[in-house]
Length: 364
Ligand code: ADP
Image 1 (cartoon, rainbow, N blue to C red):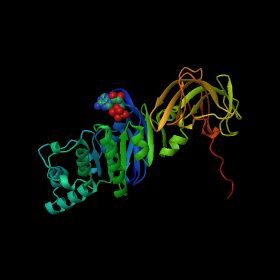
Image 2: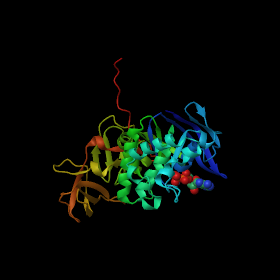
Image 3: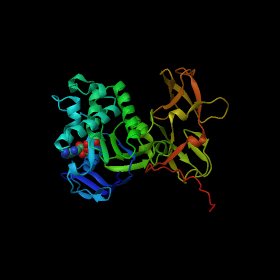
Image 4: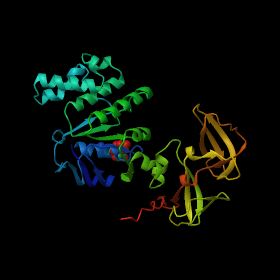
């Protein structure tokens, strides 16, 4: 059991800053996912926790110990890499037990640990195989097993699913989610650029962008209350629709010559804003009460859902995620509506969310 505390951690390669001062508290037993676009610094931050990259400024503590100058082997961490890094000439059993053997753990204790980890990862029937006789997903499970047998306080995963095809990705993701339940005391930190992995695995997501933290929160907090445009666009698929608009500071938002209402007191006052609405929050309007009128530019039938791209006069069409059976045809006029409480407003210049905190009870 160990917290990980990162305080003002900075990193540069040469004179290029890569992390600009990261502050983050990870609680013991938490599953935390670092997510963000390629190059934002996720792997670097993970490797700094692992001890594979030097920390240029600030501190990283595991438990109560500042580990800046502690070697990777002594940090109580185990890392799983995207390319598995298994020994090709060793069986699954020997690959999983190798670290323990090097650490001088006697064979009976080693075998027990390996058998327990193999059972946890559905690898019992494969212990005598070589890596080349396994699928990619099984190889990655062996790599995870090799980390488990060491009883790490902190488990680090660096894009562990990125070399797997789509079906194996899902199966291995489920395996990792199960692992989290089987090892409840182990802190897990997981890096991915895939927001679906982040949403499905994380207790807490850290969204990184250009070496800075944009927001930290539970998957639903990020989805429901993105702190800024970056997070709003990054979480959710298809991405949130964003449209230029003006806000009167009370309840009226004007866009494209149309006016819509938002709940009074939901947002801070502002003039020029960006309005955000998720594709799944848009519906075809039935009565006169609608949000926006436009023309269907394109329809994609995906079976369970239909994506309608609606031209409302902005540079990009709005995407509406409708029922699979929705009767929409390209070229026809449609009107869209949304629950006003599902509308997001962001500052037109800074991109910061204008949402006010929900009123709290004044009762003692
Ligand atoms: P991510 O994992 O989010 O894709 P990385 O942490 O791998 O991003 O990289 C962050 C930035 O640091 C990138 O601009 C990358 O090119 C740069 N970088 C990473 N490793 C090195 C290195 N060893 N030397 C120089 N630049 C590096």
